[in-house]
Amino acid sequence: MRKIRLHWQILIALILSILFGIFFTDQVEYVSWMGDVFLRALRMIIVPLIFSSIVSGVTGIGNSKNLGRMSAKTFGYYLTTSFFAIMTGLFMVNLLKPGKGADLGLSGVVEGLDVGAETFGQTLINIIPVNIIEAMATGDMLSIIFFAILFGFFTTKVKPSFSKPIEKTFNAIFEVMMQLTMFVIRFTPLGIFGIVSKMVAEQSDNLLPVISSMAVYMIAVIGALIIHAAITLPVLVKFIGRSNPLKHLRCMSVPLLTAFSTSSSNATLPLTLKAVEHNSGVSNETTGFVLPLGATINMDGTALYECVAALFIAQAYGIELTLLQQGIVVITALLASIGAAGIPMAGLVIITIILTAVGLPLEGVGLILAVDRILDMFRTTVNVWSDSCGAVIIARSEGEMLNV
Ligand code: ASP
Image (cartoon, rainbow, N blue to C red):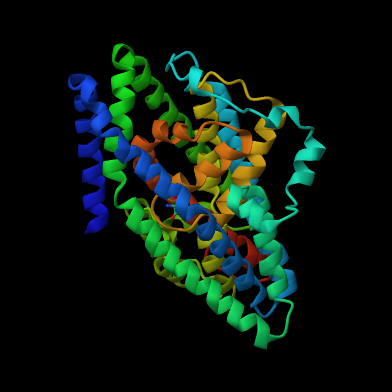
């Protein structure tokens, strides 16, 4: 019920904030603090959320029985498809350029685009934190993610008497952080009201280009998602999984519709498990390994979305990203999607990682906030679809006979 209400609340907040920004231009300072509070809260949750999400996900992999082969395949699949997804997003956003040309008047706010000054090698070296506490304190997300993956991996390498309490602790922290995130997300309508009304007031003579560039932005995201879901993944299922993607799609109709309406891979997980096992005929072992992990780690739709959103924000600020910076967006989007939780609007939380990584202003989140909830429905569906295709491909590679 709450999820349905949130949709409506966001829509109402959006409409009210636009009206407020237009008609009460001088009064927006009384409400704009709500936007600041909301953005601060998003930044507050990010480090513990991502860290616990990755550690509990990676230790989850380590716990499986046929660990070596299965996890290599599963990780290989996750990374490859997420990478394809990001490239599709990169292509679309460079093709349609939703933020370009629409002079959003934001170019003045930018400072500290320092990444371009570094060489690619140096950027890679910098992923290794010299001090993890410092990386956490300064929100250096790439380093945090890097350390979290290593920490999770080596947790699986120590004696169970040591690893079990760590796993339990991080699973527990992750659960708490998900609850906390959902609590913050509930304030999205107020955040939107604060941010959007301020933006509208600042742009009041310039509204049409803003709206039209938002529309093109949505087309870029949804278009790229459709290409990934309707072409890339089915081709993989067909040729690598030697299965019928259309049949598999039919088997998956219930979880996909649920993903669309709940915007949560985690909430959809029980239905995904059931459909992939009972309808598509994948064994319990494979589904039990690939799908729960996929729900947190494998997020093609989210990865694609992060890339398009970051480039859209850059375009809107009139910033030409160098090839190196685009490369950093790709890598960060990949890593950040691993750390995103399978809950509504988690992708919005982690966009701040990418903005920080390439030195884009965090206020850029305000630009994409208003339509994030709608795009979340589409990207979550693609996340779940990709997990299920992964289960089919891996099952076939293990010699299983399927119904699809
Ligand atoms: N809602 C997405 C999911 O649960 C995550 C995201 O916000 O991108 O899969």
